[in-house]
Structures are given as C-alpha cells and as structure tokens.
Length: 300
Image 1: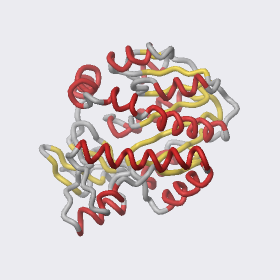
Image 2: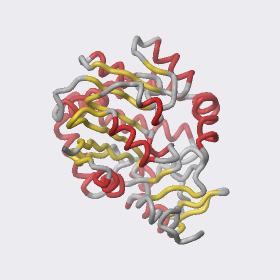
Image 3: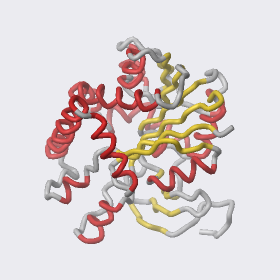
Image 4: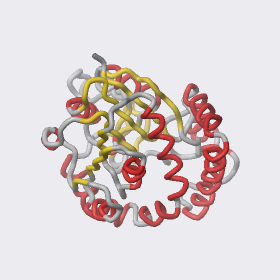
C-alpha cells in the first residue's frame, strides 16, 4: 500500500476474509480496506439487509419495545437539554420506533431509510419516512433541521467524513448531530482477544466498514467543526463474555444476555434514571460501553 497522504494507509490491525482493518493515517480512524463500493452497499441495504442479514430485526424490535421506548425517551430528553429547536431528521430510520417516540414527545420528525421493507414498516406507525439514501444530492432536497440523528449508521458507510459534512450542510445554526455507533477496539474487547483467545467478533465486513471509539469519533467531529457537548455509553455487553456467558454466534444466549441488560435498564429508567445516566457517562470517560452516544453542536 502506497504511503500517500491522499490514499488510505496505516498499520493493519486485523485481516478478515478479503478485508484488512487499518488504523488509517489519512482518516484518523479505523476502517476496512479496500473500502466497499457504494454500489455494493446499495445492494446490501436496499435489498437484503432486513431480509437476509437481519431477518429477526422487526420481531426483536417489537419484543424490545418497552425498553426501546424508555431508551429513546431518554435520548430525546438529552437532546432537549441542548436545543430549543424542534425539527429532527433521523438518517437510517429503520423500523421507525425512534422517530415515533420523538413524534409522541412533540418533535417534528422525518426519517430517511434505504430499505423499502423498513420504510413500509415505519409508515404503519404513522411517521413520515423517505425511502432513499441520504446523499449529498438528497440532502439538498430536505431543508434545514435543528437535529440530525444517526443510530448505527456511521459504521456502515463508505465515507463518514462526507456523510458528516452533508449533515452539517442541513443543520441550522447551533444545530445538533447525534451519533450512536459501536465502540470498537475498546479495553474490554482487547482483554478478551489478547488474553482469553477471543477472535475480533466485532469485525464484520461488508456490514461494518468503520470502527470508531470515543476518541476517534470526537476527534473527527472536532475536525469537521463540531463541538462535542455530550458523551455517554451504552451497557458494556462484553461484561457477559468476561463473566463466562459466551453469546458470540449463539442467538439464544445473546437474547438471554440482552434480556438481563433490558431488565437492569428498565428498572433504573423507571426508578432512578439520573443514576443510570451518571453511570454510563462514567463508563464513557474510560472508553467503556458497547456503543458510544455522542452529541455534537455546530460551531459558529
């Protein structure tokens, strides 16, 4: 690989199938190389993702709805602390439960979703979703927003820098970007792979192209003229692995572990949400958490 500032290059961390994960010196975050083409990704997400790759996604979301609603309400309350604006775009809106929650809380919401299956599912919830990709061209047709949210999106795209710049182009002054994405190569994962013979199960080309952690996503946002104003984590699922409950490749064990996480969070959301939020913010300070949850604000 040529060592050029205009090309993707950097130390190889993992090799999975025909892809390497590199700590890219050009991008300043980890991603697979070669990067899949937009055509490959369009084929995956518009046609097969919710049918072949994630066949239980909608059923699981319905089973998880109480927990999801409490989680989403918590996210909207966090966003409300930082904006008086009301217009929100959710990129990759999936089955629509997030924007349905926002709509029920008084937000003016819109989703954009490439999967026709997910967009159709969303329409039955009574929310407005555009069945399309969010691109530089489609961004120009959407108008301005006070908040743009992306939940488990940025890890899937071929060019996160272009994506964030496109988001910035449709945000009002002091607009917010809200990103949830896997916190990969985190300290708990490194213990499991380096000391307990676990393979890097989180590396899944073609689905996940980019592998951010708290530091790299915050650095990217600052570079692209955002100010990070809130940083928190989700439950560190790796704790189950360290406790001897190996859910990798085992859907039954995985759902059992997920149920335990849900029970914990539901009880705290209902009885002491401030404690839960404080706990997860503390985890984020140590780069712990299965996902990072970041809010950035456009700089003047």
